[in-house]
Image 1 (tube, rainbow, N blue to C red):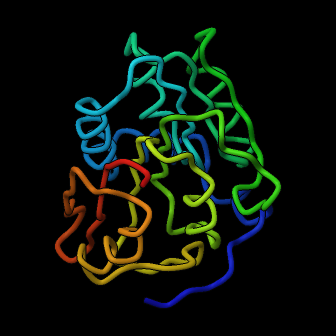
Image 2: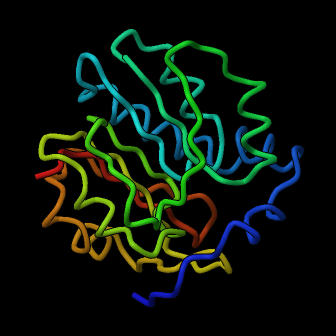
Length: 193
């Protein structure tokens, strides 16, 4: 596994147009998002206080906010075009947007009991962030087997992916999602130990 530094806000401002965001929501990664939602459905706590970190789209938020167990949903991304689109797509009193920098060491995650991150490959301080979660927090994370300019790491197998996080997460669900012939995304859901 190769590791690099996270890209700054400037990089993500130019990443997706609104049309690309819509395609991203409905196309290549919709199945991955459905896997996250399916895995979460069986272990979502009552009075769920969700943090969707580096969300990348509104797909999961738009669907999970419909669940009566969700008490609050904090959506995070700092792409201003994406934030604007999400504000237009989701209007629910339980839903809020907080565009903080995930790599900021001062950010507290104590108020959340559900943590989702489908973009973990973009975050340099992944282990530090997961370490901030309280024990018992439901965690659903994803990462790919392919590299990209915005990725700080990628994994060659589900075993390698789980190995990085197993000291922090008691994995209850795992699935490898094949998004193209050789491209894969790894999804695990479990509980912060």
